[in-house]
Image (tube, rainbow, N blue to C red; front, side, top):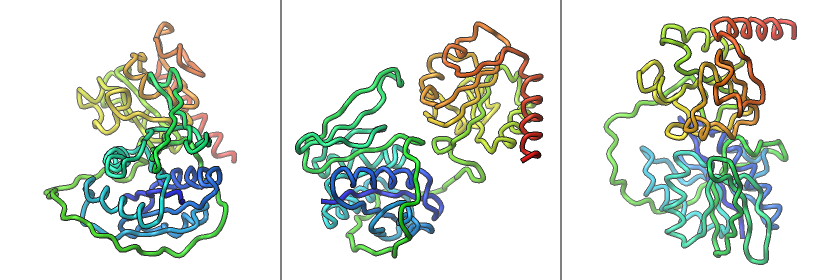
Length: 319
């Protein structure tokens, strides 16, 4: 038996989410008394470094012109069978979510998504937990099929150096012909993907217009944070839709989340309430977001945010 981790990449580079998945896979392998094998697609740079996180082997499955969930499912299923995988791990990313269900059906495997705990043995089964009802409760899932699949929640399992890099091996698989033709691909570059960001500065309609967003970007830059927005802001095109966080946008779990000029509608809270620390800045003391905040500032954001940025920059200059 082995624990197989699909370590996804973007632009030829191993993603942070993939490192977290390998970290989870290593801890799961210790519980299950086996080894963790990381598999990559496209021979990305940094693949050998997964050995430092604890992967005993790193295996590449070949290079393909574009992502196709059906193709990736097929080659990962073949890899699982050839490598004797009985526990499969991948990130709960858009890629992971599009593959995991298909792989579950193909391998007749039980699956749990967005898990937040290391598996616990219960006879021949394993138990994992995940948040439910927008993080208001937790559910325990028992997976008892011969092969088990989990996707892991972002920013939950931090990778740590445990060993040394390993040589990347290759594995021969038969990839089916892709039925998808890519006409054009547009990729956001130069920013940390929101699901992977540790620090996020988000703003809403309290900004009054897109011309005022400079103070948000300056605060984010001072913190080394990603920027985000509420749905109404994205709907009126003040900010691009890929920055929309919430129940109908991107669900995130950063270490620190700033909500600036956002009232805190339930749909927004559902996508961000797994943040470890939430800081709210709003001039309305009755804003619902304050009920979910760890820290709150009641004040004019146009006064508070520049002062906060200035204080952060002064602190950084002293270090």
